[in-house]
Length: 132
Picture 1: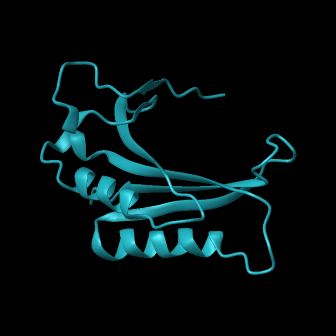
Picture 2: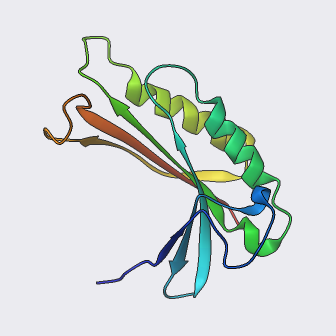
């Protein structure tokens, strides 16, 4: 089993807030960190906050800061016959991958199986920067 040490909202040294990611994950084989912004993208409203975080990541100039990506998560209340939440994540992915140097790792619908009284499932998406 492989563990991934995670540090929330911080690099290991003092830096301006613009360089502070929401999540830092140590990759055990390489000993390098992946830095992620985490953004909530729910069924209602747009996904401009996620695009703003991608723009922040895209502006990174240091090579070590370019090992980065975005995690989007949202929660869905009971649904009707015209469910479009998954399609929203597809549109978000198209917006990210068509304009920025990021690739989609995956988009998943996760059944919460009665874990929450209001949310019946969660959507999770992951995108990482293309380094080459």
